[in-house]
Length: 214
Image 1 (spheres, helix red, strand yellow):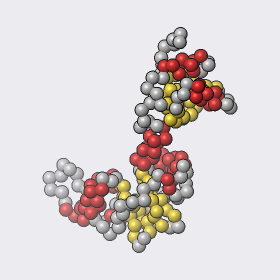
Image 2: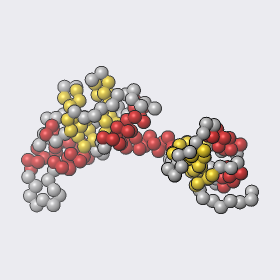
Image 3: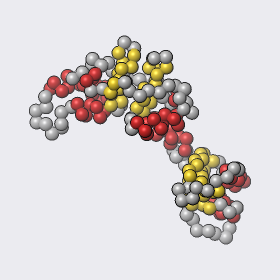
Image 4: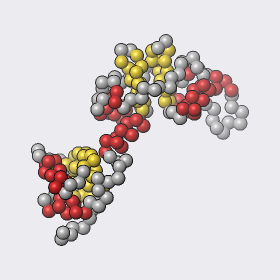
């Protein structure tokens, strides 16, 4: 999946010469937590709600100095921010979010701001990809780390006419010769397919349902 498929293109912009007060009003009105800062059509920084909180007076201040609200955004924004390209892979950009510990990424193409991506966008896409927003059940299976095992497990679901919404693969932390397959399936009662998986010799980790004689 590419960044251009999930990035926002309707972007709320700010200029570096605008004030903290103007930024606060924009954030509150549009219900946003980040905004790119653009000057003469070029990206010059990003602003986050954390930057605003650090710039504003404490809520416990009895007489907050009004000049704090008149500070220019350029004095509190993050300059030279990390950026992405529309053709970058989402998986690689998610790693950038993690390693850089950032909450947003402007998307640049030909030196022009074409999109904006936030950690919330990545979270929503993860939910969609895993099928967690759809009714269903999750089944975790420990299998040998060898070629063809995913097909063998999937065949059990196929024979039970159960639709698979998503599949995730994790390494087994206790034994590198195994891996864990996490299936999201479109059934609210997975008991029958769990019994069939066990009959085929697969180790079902979750749900931890006692074995039956079906």
